[in-house]
Amino acid sequence: MRTAEIMCAAVLGLAAALAGAADPAALEISVGGDPVRVGDRVLVRVAARGGEELLWGELEVAAPADGPWVVFDGPREIAGTRPPAWELVLIPVKVGELALPTLAATVRNAEGAGSEVTAPEVPTVEVATVLPEGDEVEPVPLRDPVGVSGFPWEWVLPFAMPVLAAAACLAWWYRRRSSSGGPAEVSRMKPLAEFEKLLDRLATRVGREPSEGVCDRLAAGMRRYLERQSDQPAEDMTSFELRLLARRLGWSEDVQRGLQDIMSVADSLRFGRVPVDEAGLKRVLDLARTVARDLDRHVTLEAEAAAEADAGVGADTTAGAAG
Image 1 (spheres, rainbow, N blue to C red):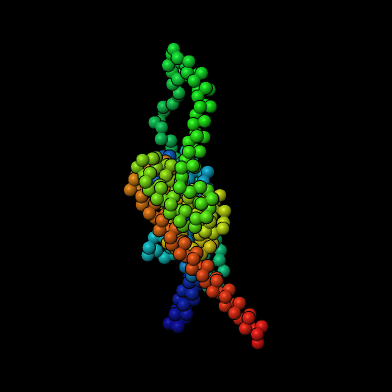
Image 2: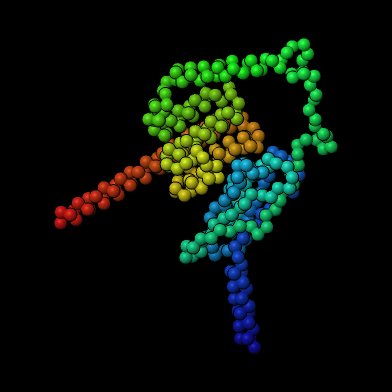
């Protein structure tokens, strides 16, 4: 009788273990319950469920540039969680009942076969406007084109447009002529030297120009630097596509995370209107310089390794021909 009870318990334990191991891997998404308005920071927590025997990769967020969400921070893995869990901060830029961006993680089994895991249910967030409830905003009627009587302002703008266009062309020509190097010199500069020259110029404009302009030129310069280093069309890629490019080319973890932080700050300022102070801008510029130098070092080492491999193959071919 005692033996039968032990065997029954063993069978039940084995069945429970097999049932737990058979649980499919999935993602569980939770969002804070506080009221959300346009521009607020929304904390999202993503937890892995099932698939304890699988190897989990990083969490990927598919947030298009023209979508209702902007990735402000993350995703970052929460230390000490098994299966893993991540946190990220999103900013809504539209109103209404918005579905969260697509969240996915890659898992691999013991044989190395990979598959993509998503959440079976993606929650939605009700986003309200920042305008006062019940108030209707209407434009103030104007008495004439600029609200001032007695002066024909409607005639000033048509005559001023050619003058302003000529002044803009003259300023552009003067800046080109007075610059230390023309386009031919810039094209001959190495990618890192060209990017660091841009960073030095932007550092002198922090506090003197709007932060939006500084971040726009930083993002454009970073894309140009990545395109010259990788020979990929980085200037036409979104921030999410840049992160995929960095991972596909096997860049270091520091370069990938630094690139994500830089583009997150630029996108948050452009689309989420999240202000950045002077200290934050200087920190982003310093981070961009560090990321660029790390990437330049990585690309140089890869080129040297490829040259050594080609030299070794050439030497072996020569030796075989001589033999």
